[in-house]
Image 1 (cartoon, rainbow, N blue to C red):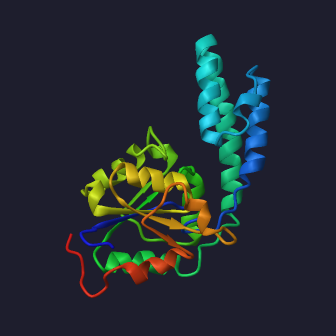
Image 2 (cartoon, helix red, strand yellow):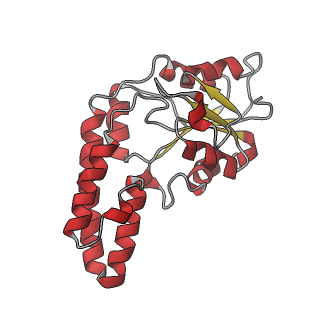
Image 3 (tube, one colour):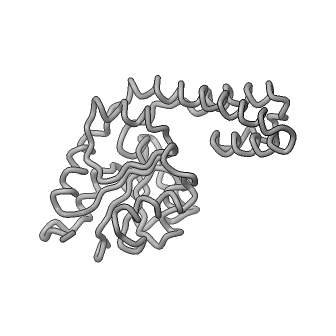
Length: 225
């Protein structure tokens, strides 16, 4: 399964740590800001939060660049505030930190690629250290998942091509981004989520727990980096 693999990339929320962000509430709060800036929120209501912000910002930019900038600052304040507050209640999935350390000991490069903001992730990491060779939050890249360039930027730092990597995540967008760079892909089920959740994207394997990954890793030899 992982023959030739030299790097593992992981999503963060819902994959390595238990999800604690209320995205529905975040969307509600952001849509209030959208409406306050004179953009119709209804066509955006079903979009992921970062994408709806981008769409509304693009519309505002056509009218007034300064107002678009103010809108971005307002929405970022709402989003980051929710993310940072949620970080205080985050716990790692059992065995996840030890799994990352084990992969490191075996010689694999380890990257974390997340749509979360850096302050929130670092707040979690301060309580729960987790080994990584590269961490790229949305604050660190121009293009975020599902854009494959988020992953490619991490792999460029690690010095590995996509076909030498594995992308692990709890959302179909993680799988799609991994497939776009010819990486092997792992879907990780959050508690209560059925395997059919990944049916439309068909990852190479689907795991009940992220730590089940180690059972699929060839542990008899160490990867040389």
